[in-house]
Structure formats: C-alpha cells, structure tokens
Length: 192
Image (cartoon, rainbow, N blue to C red; front, side, top):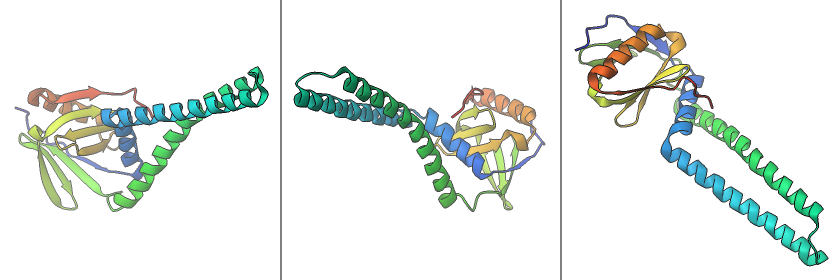
C-alpha cells in the first residue's frame, strides 16, 4: 500500500491547459480519429468527383482531353486536400477555445490542491474536498506539459507540470499506477 504522501500540490488551470487537454483528446481518442478519417475520405471523394466532372465536361466541349486542364484540376485537387487538413486543425482549435470560454470560464484560475493518501487522491477546491478512489482511475497519461488522470467515466483531472514538482508528482503517480494496476502512458512526444 502506498505510504501517505504528505506533499501537497497546488495549481490552477488556465484556458490553455484545458485547450491542450481537449486537443490531446481530439488527436488520440479512437472514436474522434475514426470520425475525422471518415470526414477526410468523404471530402476526398467529393473533390475527385468534382475534378472528374470538370475533366469530362472539358472533354465534351473540346472532344479531346486537354493535358493542361487535367494538370490544373489535379493540382487544385492536391492543394484543396492539403489545405483541408490545415483548415480542419484550425477549425478544431477555434471550436475548442469557444467551448472552453462558454463552459469552463468559471473554472479558469481556481486553485486546486492534490494530496495522495492510502484511500485515493484528495482534491481540494474552494474549501471543498473530494476523494477520488484509485479504483476509479483507469488511465494516467503523462503528456509533454501535463499529467492527465482519466477516470472510468472518462472525466479527466488535468495537472500542469509547470505548476508543481513534476518529478515528485510523476514518482507518486507511477507508484499508484503500479500498486493499483492502472495504465500509465508516457506520451512525451505528443504535439498537435
């Protein structure tokens, strides 16, 4: 059993902390990735169909294939496909920022305190304390700038590394993960 860790970790979350978690989730969640992949293929099929239509239309007008027009259509197809990926990433970023501003504005800047105990993680916020049992955690993720403690109901506790003693916190989490058979994933190379 984990020895009582008397260290207290105080931190607050910024808009960017929430944003980075949502970006991480959007780029690693299998359901979200499958949906994005499906949308990408639908977009490509539509683009190819439009390109084929213009090539066919050009053929019907001139009664021959014009290599220059085919080249232009294919270049536009490639550019549109590449631009879509960039535009999609920017759209997701902006959508998430808007969602954070609407739903989490009151949570930004609140001070949180975490302390590990034999029973679980004691989380204190605004004088109220909650206990998160270790058995309620299904996964711990160490990203480049944050720790994400994912519960079985898929809610997440976000802990920014810069606000705490990250080495001590990481050691405690690894010990908890080992003792409670919780998946501990290091995803230190992740980037959006």
